[in-house]
Length: 48
Picture 1 (tube, rainbow, N blue to C red):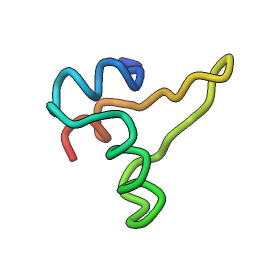
Picture 2 (cartoon, rainbow, N blue to C red; picture 1 turned 90 degrees about the vertical axis):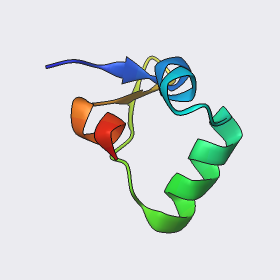
Picture 3 (cartoon, rainbow, N blue to C red; picture 1 turned 180 degrees about the vertical axis):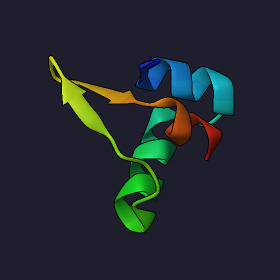
Picture 4 (cartoon, rainbow, N blue to C red; picture 1 turned 30 degrees about the horizontal axis):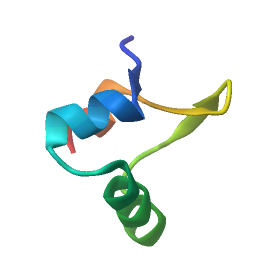
């Protein structure tokens, strides 16, 4: 399974990290996991 970091999510979406974090807190769209204090996402989150 592929793992994407917040840096990958910002590059693919064109949104800032702050915007992704705020939207995720408000709408609970992504299943964010923390590995070594860094947010990681799976391929299903990337599609959303």
